[in-house]
Image: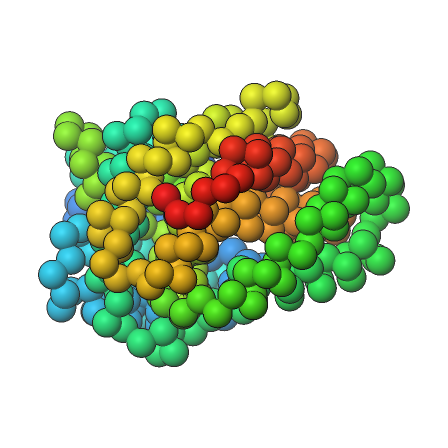
Length: 346
């Protein structure tokens, strides 16, 4: 534990005895640590300022969401931030970085990937319960913590700029992927013009953001609330399709392994609609299956843009990591296109 982390912990836990601080989770964006102390177990997290330009807006959203859920018949545990000794929800270190703390729910576990239909059903049901409970909170009351996060046309416009100024050697390496992506770019305009209603969405519905009871494997809590903000249901449903139902890892280099698992897709659809089925409009239900293709193509574009810019956003393990991720997402997009042809709703 370095002096920076020690100072931040003192601001949250005062004189409490710290037994252990260790890295926790596998997220691409923030730095997260599990803290074991005399006052209990917590998650300490440093926000990625590149990803979140306004940490105050992030924490204001999380505070508002937590207060709303506390007054709703919400079936899961409420992931509310832990206040520092001075009453604030975040602290800054000497370098100006923002830190915050959350409770650690003992007796829980996270899944690295969805292996069974039951896991897909339960995870999707939990995200559905989360979205349903937030239905009474007007979308306009929350900040857009990442403006244009799932705005396809805006992302596409930026991608064109990246192509103009990208690293020459990487542009050459990614020629085929750029061409493939641009061939399907009309999908972004189609979704934008569909007229889907605004809701408060999680925007990062991977299975790792669901805490499960270690014994029963029932959902306990939804975590990682930094991107909870206004959006459409396709953001959450599409990201579940993209992450739950992929037969391979997000960065699988062997593209023959990448495919949509239809049984998992059906299970997550059933779980999500169990909670949200009566809430969604006919238009939303009609467009749900397109969410997976839309998000896979958009995520390919985001990985590819980061690769062309020099890996400034996502954490990478080797120089071609983001390019491999983009290729994998394009392969998943193709698999979804082939398997979902003709399906109008789950």
